Image 1: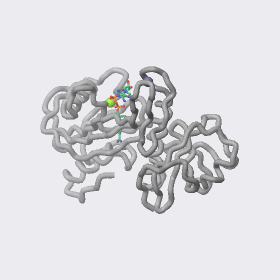
Image 2: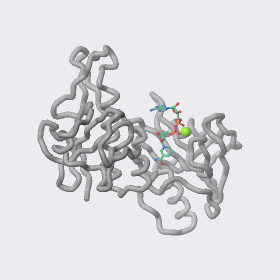
Image 3: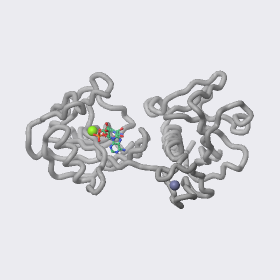
Image 4: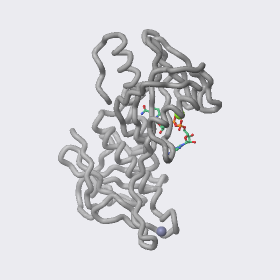
Amino acid sequence: MVWRNTFLDPAQPGGWALLYNQQQFLADSNGVLFPRDWVKRQDLPILGEQGIGHFGDDAVYLLQLKPSATLEGCSWQSLRQFMLQGDAETFRMLAYAAQIGTWYAEHRYCGSCGTPTRQLPGERAMRCDSCESQHYPRISPSMIVLVTRGDEILLARSPRFVTGVYSTLAGFVEPGESVEHCVAREVREEVGVEVKNLQYIGSQGWPFPHSLMLGFHAEYASGEIVMQEDEIEDARWFRVDDLPPLPASRSIARHLIDLYVARRLGLPEPSLP
Ligand SMILES: NC(=O)c1ccc[n+]([C@@H]2O[C@H](COP(=O)([O-])OP(=O)(O)OC[C@H]3O[C@@H](n4cnc5c(N)ncnc54)[C@H](O)[C@@H]3O)[C@@H](O)[C@H]2O)c1
Ligand SMILES: [Mg+2]
Ligand SMILES: [Zn+2]
């Protein structure tokens, strides 16, 4: 089943409903999609509703619920769980839904004047009629980079990671800088190393909560590893044939590593997740 996001008018009846709050979806043994007209007859605290796209031929709507919402036989399941275990198209749908949900939850009032906003018909935007301003879903560009030195790659651990896992370096692009500048700055800040010969590999939308990952390979140029306090718990060079536990296979972090290892070892190259 293929997921395609589109703008659907929530005034239309029918279709499926996703029940969402704060990076979680209500799910039962059949999954996350519920008959929408049935859902509306339940006594659920609905904050808002968006028509977000088609799963196969079926219309899908996102119902934003209060955190207190419960439905018999259902439990809240995290988006991260679906990233780790769900099929690819379901994860794509939920990733889009979660970002629309986050944006909606954060723009119910105007950030300038505090007036309640309203959803614009026909467009994914929240409007403040008092300021005449529109607020679109927010995306945060971030770079992610694998620093390489021949048969070695530089991987690091954040204190937030699962025990033992090492990954590539990442960080948010700051206002006014290029992504290339961000790569050099973040690598310098996090591990004290200079890089050269950046190669853009590809990108990935990352819904935790609204990053757009721009992925690179970069060659080591100079410097000894100096770890940034609080952000980096450990950082070191690993040989491509002797790697630690790595991030989830669906992440671009993992792709950057797998791609470089495949190139060094002469294996078939993986495709972008
Ligand atoms: N898909 C992947 O493979 C993958 C791998 C690693 C990181 N990521 C994502 O990359 C992003 C950045 O990585 P990081 O955590 O190392 O970032 P980072 O090195 O910039 O440090 C994180 C810090 O940035 C600040 N911050 C939070 N949100 C921000 C925003 N929207 N804009 C600017 N600053 C913000 C906070 O102080 C936070 O503690 C995160 O969203 C993370 O989930 C994705
Ligand atoms: Mg970082
Ligand atoms: Zn306003």
